[in-house]
Length: 96
Image (cartoon, rainbow, N blue to C red; front, side):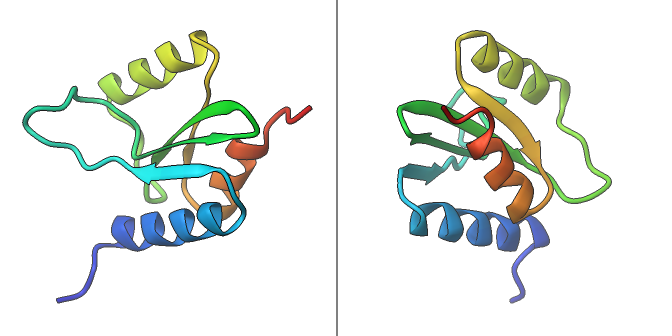
């Protein structure tokens, strides 16, 4: 069976992030997990990173947007990525 486009995007993003270092994981939502957690979380150069993956034309849910905002307010680097390049841009934003 063919993989969903978002699954393929997730695999490509994780592969690239992991190849370049840091610590990364794909969050698989479930019954016993808080809703709205971003798709990919990680740590890069001492910064917590949270990336919500979407296909072009899609937008985060209200809860996803609120969670990204709460994480950003707490000091995390966050964003919504529609491509591998955008995920890397979120990771690399304001690296000192």
